[in-house]
Image (spheres, rainbow, N blue to C red):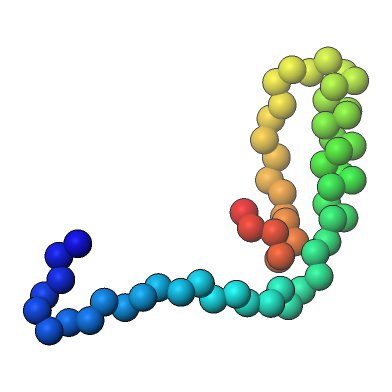
Length: 59
């Protein structure tokens, strides 16, 4: 690592932030139902559908 003379290296630290929202798993039942529906019909190719995820789920 190249550092100019007279500069200090800043040590990176991890900052842990509390989760302010409770996790929601309500979207999983709908997702599982659609997966099972595709399996039952024998449809091997699934078209991606737009999904609105809860705000605490990263996209």
